[in-house]
Length: 248
Image: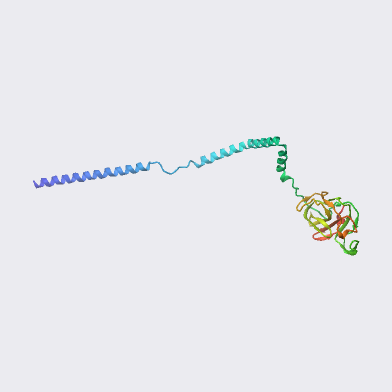
């Protein structure tokens, strides 16, 4: 009898263990299923489309904008023409604005050389010669001294012309030669024209040969006896030279 009871107890214990084992397996299977289900959930982060597709779309949009450019330009021209038609004075303003950058004098190639020749800034007699190696007589000063340039007789208000292609280095004035313009001819040649008025040239401007840069003024007190004139001085590499050696 005791043996039977023991056997029955062992059988029940086995069944309990077996049931517990099955429950454990079922629980494990449920956990795995839940985890897999969670893995299939939609990601909360925004996924960007293919970058190559974006690049292609951008190129297409750019091409479209370029293709539309000429039409836009034509439209702008039409608007401008309409504005001019509505207001003729506005047309002048638009033309001035469009050509503002074109009115400046073009840069010239300055290449004056020893065999180059200058125009006379005014036509007239030389009343005082260049003389740096000896003194000459100055009537107004009533004394002898060296002369770094030449003094050309002229008349008040005569136009004074640029003797060669040049760039204006300086516009100034002093007591002796009055208002003057210093010009760079290139290759270290410079020319100064003095005894001027109503100077039209401005510093930095390029002048073409023969272009009017100002007009002859009344003489300063240093040349009152000599009379109305234009003072012309020339230098090469900073040293005075005789302008007559380079005149036409």
